[in-house]
Image (cartoon, rainbow, N blue to C red; front, side):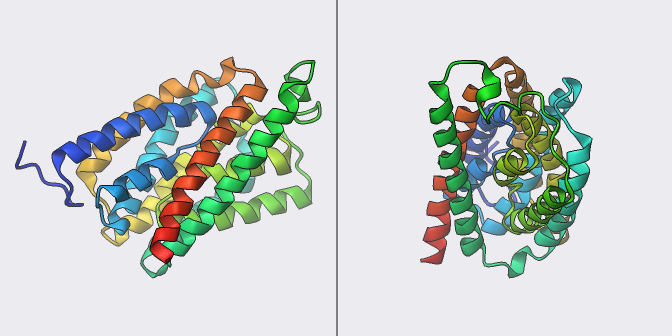
Amino acid sequence: MSEFEFASGIQLWEAMLLTVVSFLVGILGGFVGLALGTIRLPAMLLLGMPAPIAGGTNILVSGLASLTGAIRHLREGRVNMRIVLVMGVPAFVGAFLGGFLSDDAPKGLLILLAGLLVFWQGVEFLIMARERSGEEGTDTNLFGGELSGSTGMFTPGRMSAEAGIGLGVGLLGGAVGLILGSIRLPALIRILRVDPRIAAGTNLFIGMLIGAFGWVGHVLEGEVDYVLLVMMGAAAMIGSYYGAKLTGRVRLVNLILAMGLVLLMVGIFLTVRGAMDVF
């Protein structure tokens, strides 16, 4: 066991710790519809992994975590293929390009920017949940009455906005080794006006494919620890599958509250890490 070597240079106990973290993050991510590589990546960096290898390994772990969660959501009818085409395809292209060009990207600045965006979205969700939690009535009141069961509003303007966001988020995520579903998820709900449960399932499905496309770019640059990838990926897949079971069993207001808390914590993680690299 002591002779076990990792391409990233970490020790076996560190790899085991990251595997446990990956499993726990997978459970939470499957529940809220996020791969949450934004939590795994800081943990990998804190243990001293080189940023390019951490990013390249993390993005496929995120894809694998999204895979099992997405399968569960797909079986239960919470994946909208129209959204996958509108937002997903541009995101796939952006993720590949971002991963391929990752060596030239100012990672600290990109992580800081992503952190600020995610933090702001978390605050928005918490405010929304707080405003609605005291109201009488059913979950349909959460977003003004029409989003429970909504499959979305697909006007040309809304679809163009989603495609642009998908491309931009894909580029940013591919460059830093993150799927950044925490940015896509609020956009799905806000712009396309889709039921948060459907948004969560569809977001994981898109994240699964983004992880694969972004990972290819990192592979071409030799930035992957394959042994660690297997360990963390398997743990994330198991956790995500069981976490996805919980999504359809909670009230919308509680799901939005959970999303807000997760986004807030992820935003803090990323902002602090990015600021450390920039300043």
